[in-house]
Length: 325
Ligand code: RIB
Ligand code: CA
Image (cartoon, rainbow, N blue to C red; front, side):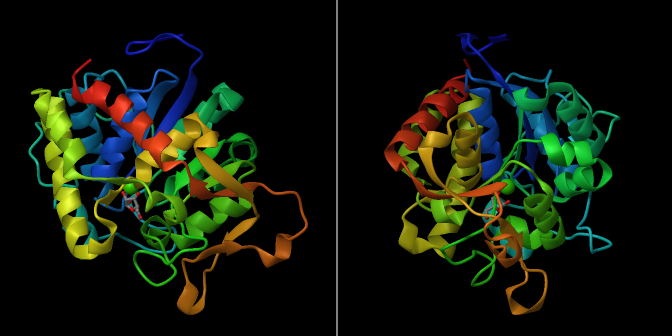
């Protein structure tokens, strides 16, 4: 296969399941700038935004980044155990009301596909099997719904998700990470029923930080894509100055999951069967499943990351998209 940005290389097919906020946009740019990846579609989930606003942002950014040909599929609009969804004030504070730092990006000419995100996920795994990796970076409802409908999907899907916190505190409560908190039941189904699931959580994503120094480089390209990436990420860095000033930058959560999908050696993986707590004060916590200790493992958790190597990969790949190549 030929990647428009990378020439002749062996490519892995990828689906991004995004709640299109600012680091989701960076994950999209990372995927588009990666010669190893063939992005076959985006499935929209909710979290940083409502699902319909995620669809709009997905289409708008694909057009801005020069790939309006990539299809977008609308996903489930709320958690399995709820009737509706409203964006949390903290999500709005970090990602802006529109999800992309309140930076204006025109609506795309392209429209959302008629097929549902869940059907697209199930069909794609049936079609591509081991050649496909799915990277969820928001609420996991689409993935869990696909697993409930199709045991074959659960059996054959390769999943690298951003979410959870194993050995560090959460970011919405002392032990709960934001993506898991949106739909703990869905995340629990995913980690207990999936046969190949990798967790890229706060243990590693809060070590990979970006600062104004890097975003300045994107702005200097003088392209619409570079301008958007720089302005939106500056909004995100500014929010981190309030929510986590000790870090000195913003967390590259979702891009790191894409990085690990391409190259798992960027992180150290701990094989451990996971579950998500569903009851009591720890609801939403990702932790080892005491009922599956000693069984062969179906999940693994990133517990250390090669920060300099990841940041170099990140800047090279996102830089290509920012430059408009
Ligand atoms: O906890 C970080 C995660 O929550 C990221 O995926 C971010 O985009 C939000 O969805
Ligand atoms: Ca996200």
